[in-house]
Length: 114
Image: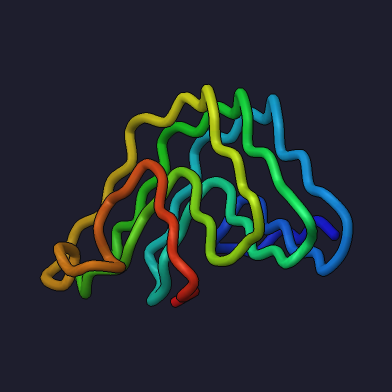
């Protein structure tokens, strides 16, 4: 299933099979609201996943309270391979921007989805 949300350009979620997220170009993701934003997010419990040859640029979270911005984020997954991705120009601002989950991050891997 591919779902597009206002604060995340691509959110990929599946419970079976394999996922191949490759050769995507994502640019100009902007948010001011009270949540994190990003280019591609994977939340997955299938057998394997690949994130390869994606380009993510100009991801900007401008919430002054400080929420995260990321290029690629893996919230959960089994046997996830991340290779040859180009990520640049990721920005966040605000007073809480420099904590563990609210940084500006190119590739973020964790099991917690804020």
